[in-house]
Image (cartoon, rainbow, N blue to C red):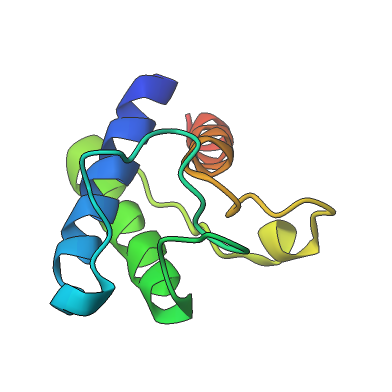
Length: 102
């Protein structure tokens, strides 16, 4: 699986989750890209949204590639820099998890 594929799955999931937010809380989904913040200041998701995103990405990877990964694991939580900061950092982390399963 290439990074582009993982990134596409993440962005697809992110757009789906953001479309469910209340109108007052909705973020423009047209401007989403690799630098989109997932946590911290200017994040597009709240904590429940991030959990939903991670679960959805795990399911999409399982369905499309028949690979089981757990994104929010002890290794992710113990890193000095969170892999959940941006779409790009999440893509890199997901790609690493997938490569370990191949």
